[in-house]
Amino acid sequence: MPSYRTKRLTVGLAAVAALTLLFAQSVRADDDESESQVRRGFQIVPPGVHLNLAGKNRNLVGLGSYIVNSSGCNDCHTHPEFLPNSNPFLGQPEMINFPQYLSGGRQFGPFTSANLTPDAFGKPAGLTLRDFITTLRTGHNPNDPPGQILQVMPWPVYGKKTDHDLRAVYEYLRALPPLPDNPHPGP
Image (tube, one colour):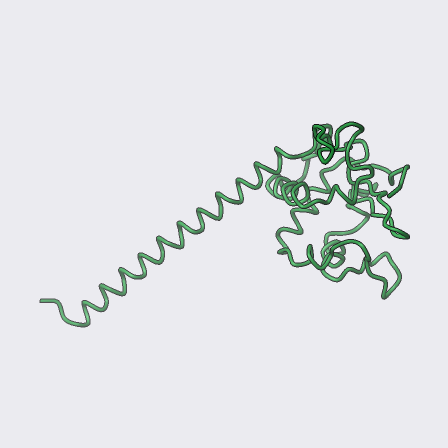
């Protein structure tokens, strides 16, 4: 007959095995969800926008697209956000304004949304990854005067995303074609 100690050890080992199995299933479910978001991210890149994946992390680009294109970034950073006769809010088939996609130009009173496409050095909005994350966490763009914070941008919301999510957004923005600042800003 097994001793009390042997029974405890057996129960303990069984508990460890069960927890390991549950953890493995949880990790697998998380991986499946991440893969699903990456796949969906590539599916929802606006038609007409051609990504440059050379030297980019494909999974981060896909996840970044998922975050950007399902979070309303286009609403403020593209002006106008839809091509003519393509506004889904008016019952028209949606077609994002890809010639101005994320090149800024939406005006909110005295504020104009920034161009998020890569600059000549491949940096989205002219920011390094570190500066990009800092801007979204603090609301202060290091290129602006000290003490100035972004007024319309919902940085307190986006700043709550994980570093991994923000790296993914940055990587997606790096994959976009560079565009000059929107030549026709407006409300």
